[in-house]
Length: 214
Length: 365
Image 1 (tube, rainbow over the protein chains, first blue to last red):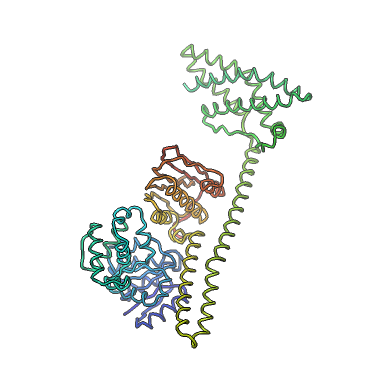
Image 2 (cartoon, rainbow over the protein chains, first blue to last red):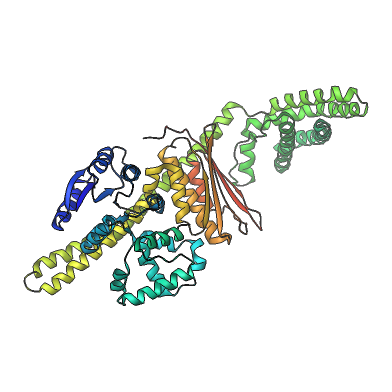
């Protein structure tokens, strides 16, 4: 699987490269600034781009802008955005196209290697990987509160994991329940929130996030 | 017609001046005997009230600000106050005006009133007379440049002292947070790792546990640091400036917030930060006390002034108590020559308006 990395801190960039190579990813290019990142993403068209939000030359949200621009030029290009902090505003912008293949995670999540590698694969496969912190903020939003209050605690937990982008199987594994039970919960959630049922995992996730982010 | 009211005010002021002048002279001459001292204090207060009322009338008719030109009294007893007032040149200008009011004001007021009765001469002549008199009066009562400057220096010293205090307190808080938070966790982490290194061969199970615990510590330390950084200078503010910062703030707020912000360029970083934290504080207050489920934020920049308003549809009754959140905002913005206006009648709605001078730079840093 071909990967492009955009990260300006050498320590983290080398760590990421080592980590990804150990998991059989092919790092085709690792760059340290916004303009080269955009060029690398568009010219290599990797299976997934792993991008830090803050990059030179401006040290603002250069990486995020490059990612969004690359996806405008190459629709559906899978991008996993990493950052020291997560902002709902940025999550919203990344998801604005309504397409999958998007991830937005705190850098701390890298420490859980299995989860991180799984997230990279998921994004490369056109899925989503949203940081639990983003989802927690979305769930805490006042406008979401009314219909969400009708969910049982179990269902809320499933909704949260689903919004992070996890498949039914992954949710089942995490909550120590059967996949069938997860299916029952999701059906209940979709009918309570009045969302269109979809078999496609990815479309389902985007529907949930869109619902929460109204 | 406003000048008719003014003519009436001038007449009344003139009449009161006629009563006050002899009283002032008598009390001034009785100062040598102790009875004169309280009499003088009272008559000086009356003189101030009277000249302030003239300033207000002149302000209304001539469209100038009726700024009181007096030196500040510290309230250290009536005798000290009296001493400050006697040393204040504004007091003597008031006295001069009193004389003018007695000699000219009263008569001029009556003539203007009588003229009004004899239309149409009055409609033509009286406004001119009233305006001329008020212009002359305001000139006598004006605040001199030196006084304006002295007052400004006073304001600046106060706000500078407050800024220094606030900053020192802020740095102490950051130091304490680092010390008790991230730093302590990193110490625990390196201890755990050291122990794990020793135990690696003897007890692989324990080693695994220690390493897992270390990772946990690292992630909590990172969370602490993130919180701290947000409190110092929110990253989104650095990335996107005030407009993006306020939008992010609205998304994270515990109530529904509508943001209408337009800014062609970026404000200086300290201003961005001050406004961001002020709005954050107001929104937190609104969520806690207003009982409203929604709020709005409005931001514009024109004529080198940045204006921000935050409102909610709640129960109102917000006041800037000393030591309270609103007072804190006032002090923070004072460092930038900014002002805070609170409109919060009982029953609501509450609108907090902030204004500060600021020059925008072009969009990119």
